[in-house]
Length: 94
Image (cartoon, rainbow, N blue to C red; front, side, top):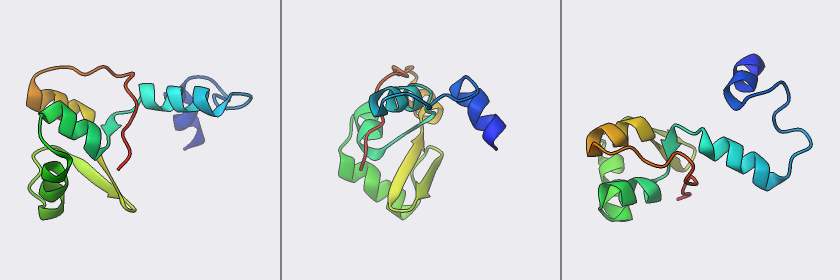
């Protein structure tokens, strides 16, 4: 698993000797998932509309719940909207 993470984030020890801001920039710029807030912005709907759809289980894009947080597939949202997003935008927290 460690080898996979090292390859994914680039380098043998990508987070050593970096500030928290630098680590978060690396993680969010390569992320394939977004939070509810960013998904709502991409779809042009409210946060509660996306949340309710996730809760009901009828959200049309691949998603996963990790603890209390929902993560939604960025490529899936791009396919649904037909527009690529800026991959460097930060992940929204819910």
